[in-house]
Image (cartoon, rainbow, N blue to C red; front, side, top):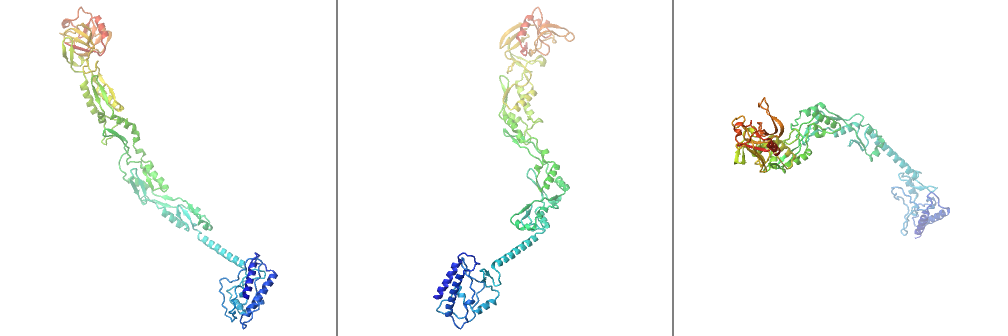
Length: 611
């Protein structure tokens, strides 16, 4: 119990001393040192009383106790690092069974001299002791701080040597994390990097894609294609110092280099020329018939192209490493493209579709002839593919043969020129007036069929519904089925009398003298005629041709044989004078009536001459 109390007192003093915060190198105060020494001596004496007296005595004054520190920090326990505690192989007396075994540093005090000697014979254990000044010493006199510094220097030296050794391995090689053209070349020399880069840049087959999506492939060997790396391409990447290898572990470097590309232009051109590209020709967009309407058929691009333009474009693309060629991008088809594109035909399509909705009506007063949309669409000429045929000016071409059939039929139904007439005569009622030649008969309507076809084409191209008259080569006075109508001049040869009708009303009448009936050369021709001119104060006939010259005040010819109405002074008119003393074929009238008639008639008015 006494030992325990003393041991506790020692530990309390040491703890108080360690907690003082004083520097470890300061010696404890003399007063404290004396007090602790006395306690330790007393403790040693107590311990000696319980030990075997046969063991050699160990004097307390020979034990070297570590000086107490002034600081409050606990005194470090002195141990040998990783050193096993030596076994007590001496016959040192054991402590009494009644007394508890000494603990702590106080228990270490009564070590025998034999143990001290054994420690000195085992150099691998270094017992730390305190210097007189308070610092720790190793067995060979070196402080831990110096030891740590020495270890640190050795470690730093090892790291430096290792860093330099690694740097030396990158001499003549690319540093880690170095990429050239996205190929990792870190750790490679120039030769290995060149092999790697060329392996990744192996020439591909030349692939040409036509506008139709067809692919034509020429193998690289067919046109002698190969890549190489120009001298000096690696200079920038290889100029990095080897000592920067560690930094490159965290900061990759990317470099780009170009390749020298070689091939045979002659072989390339031969491949293009010898390949069968097809013989389709480009076609223009066109409007095609689709049932009763029309639609646009887009343009097409044929197989023909400018081979020189294509070869030049391929050369440009190969120079930048592109082996996939879109032929249309080269412009080789430009001079072979269609000249008419679908977007150019928008208005034309609208016009064509108007054909399906328009009609053309020919008016004949009391009847009409209609060209409907079905006929128009049917008349548009089509190619074998259904496209609309156009002329050099881009105009629609209509089927003139079909149109001619229509116009001819219309003329046959409506023309009156050259046809006999049913006529209601003043004295005889209904009679038939025959067409007496094309010179003695001059009245009627005749369609100019060629001109009417042209007119019809223009109207159809306009695509509008209209009502028109056809083009006539010979015009009448009344455009109805009965083209004589209700306004005309009736000349009755047998009665030697004429009547002027206007709207079925006789507005004037008079006797006349016609041509000498018994002389065929002077006989007045019968027929369906018209007044085709009105002339004042002229001379009829010539002495060289007719053998006479007759001045007249009013001249109104009605046929193309020179017969007409004119003034001529005679003693009488009418009766049978015409049988033997008639005119040369004209209708002779008194001057006063000739003047009246001149004022009543119009050019074109029908003149019906009958018996």
